[in-house]
Image (cartoon, rainbow, N blue to C red):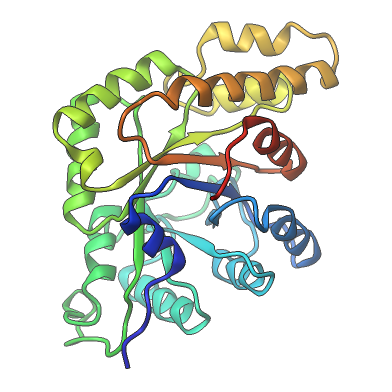
Amino acid sequence: MAIEKTELHKRIESGKQLLLAEFSPPKGGDPAPLRAAARHFAGKVHAVGVSDNRDGVHMSAIAAASLILAEGVEPIVHVTTRDRNRIALVSDCLGAQAMGIRNLLCTTGTHQTLGPCRKAKNVFDIDSIQLLGMYGGLADDGSLVGEERFADAGPFCLGSTASPYADPLEMQVIRLAKAVAAGSKFIITQPVFDVERFGLWWAEVTKRGLHEKVAILAGIRPLADADLAKSYAARRPNPMIPDAVLERIFAPGDKKGQRSVGIEIALETVQSLSGLKGLRGFEVRADGDADMAIEFLEKSGLGIA
């Protein structure tokens, strides 16, 4: 029996603009905060991404996505190759499909030494490009896990990430092209704070016509306060957040003022990037502050029509 494509998949193929949100599952087993967050975003975005133990140990991304789906919101499960071998990755994929989840964002994952679980052993059996190819071909070829095929697997709406700020820039564009060739339908970039550097990356992307082959969305992360901005900048190996942006966040002496500036900067970023020809939309990251993300969405004028 043929399985219908997801609503996200259909929208990508339609060529229309996209608006997504993303947050991390709770660091615990209580589903109530997750359900509440899902209800916050219902009707405001086309789908919600669920990160996979990005900054430490959280509730299972697949379990969290099933709770979000139950609230009537279409989820996108992030899948990292850092923690699982190919057997577990395929098993999780099939399990997600059984629960009605077929939007999958394939990532390698942040190295565990950059987070609180430094003593954990990584896996990295395959990388995110191989994961894209494996998931896309499960119905016809299961050879990566020693199987002939997996009947009725998919169709999946597969996505991946892009790093406009990593060097060398040319290699990042080559990696993006590989992700597209491997079956990625959508790409979400790292959160954008340096618009000028993003523009250099975008020029190379469009020069190769990659924006015509895949839906590319710019990541947006409103910074709630100076402490968060400083911590976020310190965890990244390159200057993703320009000093001028950090200075603006630090300028107000109170948290309320810093929060307002954080939203203001995010709104300015969206305004600057909206003029880029071929950019298909935005993803707002709401880790730890869904209310701030909702306020940003309301003030941005971005809609899901």
